[in-house]
Image: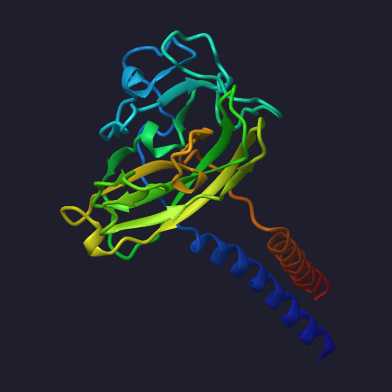
Length: 283
C-alpha cells in the first residue's frame, strides 16, 4: 500500500511539472506582427552613423507632421547614440554611464527629442489582428540629454495601437496627446536622468488587447510610438529618448520552480519504469 501511494504521488508530481510547463507556454501572448523590426533600410545601405529619420526612411515606417519647431527624429547605427560628427544638427547626448549593445549586430535604433515641439510620432500599419486577442510588444529603450544643457529629465515612450491619428497639442505647457479615441495606450517604464547623465538600454514588454472598435477593416491597426519627455513639457532641457529591437525574438525559458517540478516528475516517472522492469525480470 505504501509503494502504491508512492507511485501515485510520483506520477502526480510529474503531471504537475508537465502541467506547469504547458500552462506557462499557453499563457504567453501572441507577438504583435511588426515589420522591419530594427529600423533597417531595405534595398539601399545605411552608411551614416546617424541621420534624420526622413533621410534614412526605414521601410515600413512613416512619420507624422513635424513639431512646431521641426522634427528632431533620427535613425542611428548601434554605438552612435552620442555621435557628434554629422553636419545636419544631429546633436550628441551625455554618455555617462554610456550605452550597451543589446540587439543583434546590423540593427539600428530610433532617436527622438522628448520635447513634443521638436519631434513627432512614427507609425506603421499592423495586419492580421483579431479582436479580443492579446498581443505582446517587446523593445529596448534608453534615454539621455543633449550636451550643453542642464537639469534633471524624465523620458518614456507612449505607444498606441488602434485607428491611428495620434498627435500633440502644445498650445499649453505641458503638451497633451490628441487623437486617442479608439487607440489603446500603453506607456513604457519611466526613466529618470539626473543632469548630464543617461539611462542605459533596458527592456520593456507591453500588452494590447484590441476590440473591434480599435481595428481598421476588421483586422488591421496602426502602431504608433511617441517620445514623451518631462511629462510633455516644452521647457527645452531637452530629454532624448531611444528605441530599438522592437519584438526582437527572446528565448523563453521556464521559471526555476517549473524546471524543478518537471525534473522531479521526470525522475519519478523513471523510477516507476525501472521498478516495473525489475519486477518483470524477477517474475
